[in-house]
Image 1 (tube, rainbow, N blue to C red):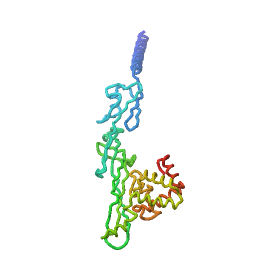
Image 2: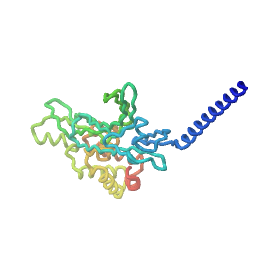
Image 3: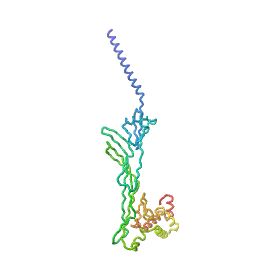
Image 4: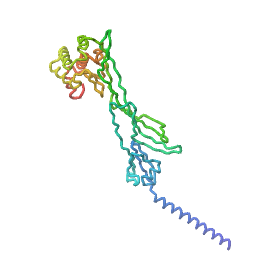
Length: 322
């Protein structure tokens, strides 16, 4: 009897133990069932995204859980103390600044932090990745052209002042504990093309007659002189008065018949706005300072490409160039 009684007690204890385990498991299952696991997308201001799996709903808690911090100048949507919305998206953004430049600024690069794309923490320290825009000057070149030959004292005359250009270079920079450890160039954009300085070298003369002889038909030429020369060349090609009239309109639009005119954006030069200016060297080595050389090249270009100035002007009216 004692043996049977002992066995019964042991069976009862086992049943009670198993029942307790089942109760605990069911309790844990019920508790786990109340926890919702969400997939939340974090969008950074540099257009990158990070998707995290979390049981948190508060924005601040989610960011803290993933070692992401908000820096000065950044905004976050929804707010740090709010819960994520139905779209399960957190957006971190930074307002971009515009760098104002001027022609006289120094050549020292100007750096600006425009975006912070990621912040990570490790046992060795904090690593911050930023997008930095650097604005620097592009130095202009000096072109020296001798327009006379012979013995005597030479004089330099600046016929076009040089101007530095401006370009922006964008880098991705990594910092470890506020010390730069890596820099990678992302893009380079030219904001303003440099304008070359043009220096004309002539011989010093003592008389007005000598000076006039040297500059006749070149650097002292007016628009009227250039047009008169072009008109005669048009007649030599067999073109009509209407062709010459349309040529005047065309080059008024391009350069106002100024032999030193230069487009700051493209670099096109001279009365016909040749691009590049060196194309006119086929008509003469003095293409930078001689209106006749420029007219000769320009008329030959029009004849070969369009047949006559009227056709070139019509093309320019439609396309904006010829």
